[in-house]
Amino acid sequence: MTQELILTTASQRAQDGQLPYRGAVTPQEAFALIQGNPAIKLVDVRTKAERDWVGMANIPAEQHLFVQWNLYPEGKPNPQFLEQLKEAAGPDEVLLFLCRSGVRSRHAAKLATESGYRNCFDILEGFEGNKDAAGHRKTVEGWCKAGLPWIGA
Image (cartoon, rainbow, N blue to C red; front, side, top):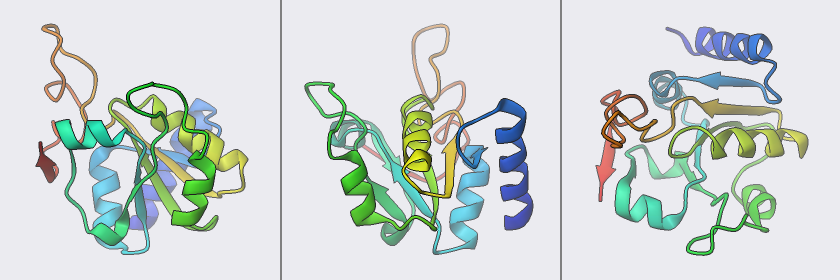
């Protein structure tokens, strides 16, 4: 699938789902976009503790941004989120937001869009995905389940 087709499909998902940002991509589509265009950035909004303890996507460092949506251990929203995002990326860049299961990334993509970022995409399913029947992640959906490269904790 070409970059253009991925972005068109992602934008169609946003229209169909009435999403408040440019689009939504699967983990596989996100990885294809990153591989195909070094200007595209993945914005991991999980806490540093999550990245340290669970792992993170293994992509080129210059394409990997870390801007926490919540702070650890207090769990409160990061009051510096937008300021930190502005330091890391410009309003015209294509930004792919990633969290554990796709909830925080949706909120981050929405806030960034409302703040003038024009090309925000949520990565559906997140890094670990939802829990299976036994309460485990990485087995049902998400970046890890898709077999995409990641660095484990």
